[in-house]
Image (cartoon, rainbow, N blue to C red; front, top):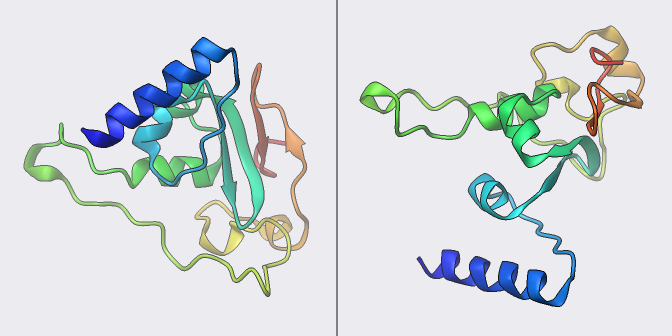
Length: 134
């Protein structure tokens, strides 16, 4: 409840002063409640950018989909099994070649391992970095 009060205060101050607000967090609930647009990063690279409703409603990048699938859901009978993204985050000292997410991506293809994908536009107001979307 304290977190919600602080976030409301920050949002109100931002609105009243006509200022933009940048929130950097791993808490997707905070993002859903405070953001208009979202940039999802992995391994220091932008994976996807979209409006908050579009991103949560139909994520384009495999990492964004995996991230959202790993959120516990209270509406599933029996609590449901938590989904985890296999593998480990890349080392910033020795990042993988190609797409930084490819070692953990179930949809990775050979090109993902070698070439970093460009940013493409899978829809209006959206950008994502994935060879499957290019």
